[in-house]
Amino acid sequence: MAPPKKYPDELRERATRMVVEARRDPAAATGAIKRIADQLGIHPEALRTWVKRAEIDAGDRPGTTTGDAERIAQLERENRELRRANAILKSASAFFAAELDRPSR
Image (cartoon, rainbow, N blue to C red):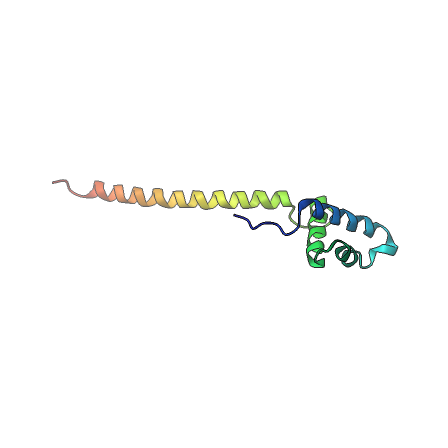
């Protein structure tokens, strides 16, 4: 189970939107993340991470989008499950093949 979030989603969205808008203005772009984080009571590094994720999801920055990352994680879980099932089937088939090779009494 995932731990509870420290900041609500509405605050994340609002803070990210404020930074994006502040960066559009060249005069306010410098130190926008620190300034907005201080105003909203958020740790600056948390806000920097949210902004980076939003830029990646919007296609403004290279990287794996949130949707792609979720899909990759889902496929990796499915892959692990299939490998485990394959290992079980291989060991079962080896067991039954050995049973067939034994002479009957």
